[in-house]
Image (cartoon, rainbow, N blue to C red):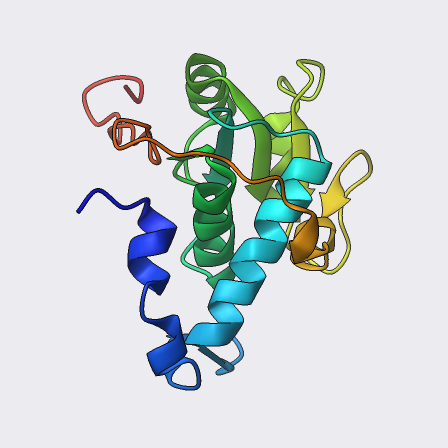
Length: 175
């Protein structure tokens, strides 16, 4: 079967709705399959409301955290592409990858926003997952609190890209 990532991950959500799916290591909160699926649809609706179109790119500049999974799956529901960048990259490395990938939205921690200074003038929206977003950034709640019924349907083809990974750049810039 050629299912989109989110369809594959949630195809049996009704059967496992109340079972643990993700555990937030920082808070110890457990999210069941139904919650993860709902939050993913909310994120997809939030991405659509922010103007992200099918096939456009969201960059995740995050450590290992629960929001990574929510945004990745939400982007899949939206038909968007996710590229991931190492938070330890230097500003130039992040900018190069974001520009090469065509990132429209970057989801990150407030502590990393300074690394994105070169991108803020390139029509890139920055969303922080912290409680206090930096000036010029939006908070993750614009995604996680969106109305999941307001996400336009997209037709995802088997050849559509869901992830655009880059190397770590150990022998040069990330590629």
